[in-house]
Length: 472
Image 1 (cartoon, rainbow, N blue to C red):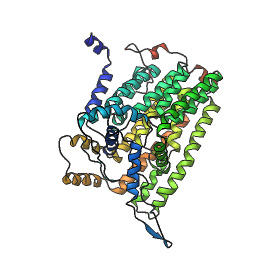
Image 2: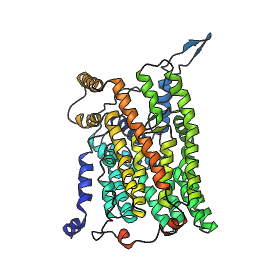
Image 3: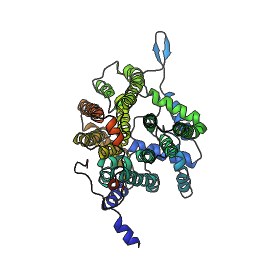
Image 4: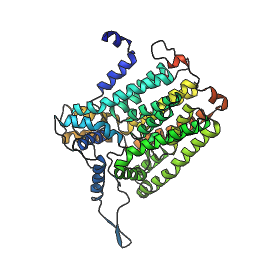
């Protein structure tokens, strides 16, 4: 029976699982430092938020004071926070028993480097497996939900996507968040609004971004004239879930929110120009980087999201298109868009493509993963993902630092900056085009027919036949 059940599993799902298992030893070095030390904190019953606070103040204590106008002040050009665990608390609850389980067999000790140095630590393979096991399960859940929402072909397009595999198997916890987001939208389509609110709240407690989708569903419920009691219940459950998760660790979360508010802009945004200016050794870059950039971000993000919500309401956007538009607005307005952030948009675009297929949306999907993938290959750069696997068999020594120095010098500083800026502005252009595509020709007629049940797309199994214009 087990063999027969295995034969019914799609080959693309087995292939994706095999790739993810093979990538267990590989990881982004700096983020792996965060996840490993999170395990250490949890194993010792210590809050990662307090460790973040301690590391931040320790880093600031090394600044020193500089003379200015007869007084001594802190230097503007220094990082204000140490980059450690800056996420909501739900991952801590998930990984707490796994950290305790590992600590029963092996002691765990902290491993940190100074800000800006290469985090080349030997992380036991067992911890890598324990960390990635829930993410692999979440990946399968995302594929199953996307199969329900958009059909097998699009579930396959997501599960085997090279950018998704890089992020979920060797970088971040995005798919754990995406699992709850897709579950929330699936439940909304089934009119299980209270459960949808609970799922969306859990997604927001994994990473902050799903919070921007709360108004999307709220406006859609209002436009669909859902009974007021159901709407009120949706909002109450969402807010109650978030409050229940954040309240016990509010002091630490408040410190994390300060960190995010004061972060300078970077990566797939126009703020990448600050990095370009720094390569030309502009003497005023520190002020723009640490003061002006965070302030600009605090203005542009609410403006972009507000424009998306207003467009959703005035153009009567269907739910999938409105969700995509809100995430696109987040990318256009946010001061920092790290490459893994883009993963949230991909399943929503596949869902929208299934509801209202077009070649333009297929292009947007391809651009939405190809550009951040190219950016990551240059920015990390991609060979550094090998470091954790390398350290499984060879100890780190000063000679290794020499090879890393050669790797960083392989691309000239100014050429590196210009290449990243080019990709960042291409991504911004792609998101502007996505805004146009998502809002073109959408109105009352589309909204009323967008969610008719499609028995073929909802069917789980090999009998599904994708449409000709499939994004994959």
